[in-house]
Length: 314
Image 1 (cartoon, helix red, strand yellow):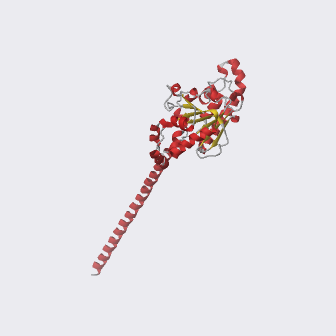
Image 2 (cartoon, one colour):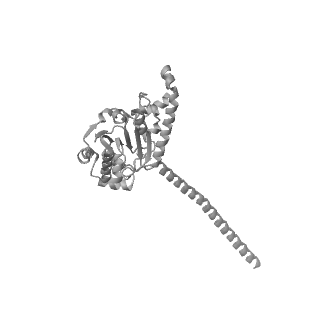
Image 3 (cartoon, helix red, strand yellow):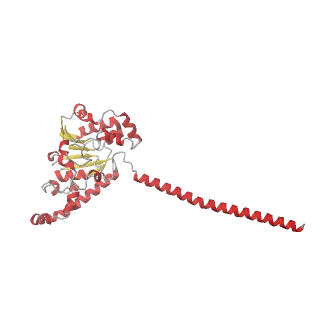
């Protein structure tokens, strides 16, 4: 009888021991699962953050490295420079609306010899880029000065850094421009402005105003009213007889970019004044006297620079 009781007790102990072992195995298995789940979740979060980084949104067209993808590597200069006329800029006060990183603004000052040119952009980061580019151009300009006499006597082989300058400085122009004898930093300036809403420029007057591939972003962000404000303000800031150079994006481009923000999506649905009406608005409503279509001179230009370019005279 005592033996039976001992056997029963031993059996109960073994059962409890087995249950403990099973529960321990269960806990270990769960503990192993948790880090795996956490790891998978972390990897998912990491992938999402990578996606967000890769999918940066530019609701105002304020792309980083904008000129990098619009100008091919085998192109010495922005093709649009070829259609601009020197008399619009030489010795003139100029304004570049939506200047981005300032490359085009600096090229115009250097090639055509502006008296002054101001580049404005809504994005402070692009204005920082523009100031960086300007400092770089000035350094290169200054480093080239001592070698000018030497290069004239030794020929092309004596030009300092000619390869780099030919790509980044559009060094094909003659050295007679006033910008060559005057420091570029005295001619070119940049400032952050929302051109549609700012009043900081109201007292200024310009001989030439550029608005290159900007109208779409004004239109999508501020609608038809914003577009009319843009055109009206340009008219007010121009001197009598002044030139307004516009490169409007086609309607198809609006379709491609309408979802970059809730604002652009909403405004896209309400836009009435499509790009094919801009010329009529500027001549008949705003009051410009004449328009010249410069587009044909861009034939054969690389993709991205095949848009219409129009020059209006006040």
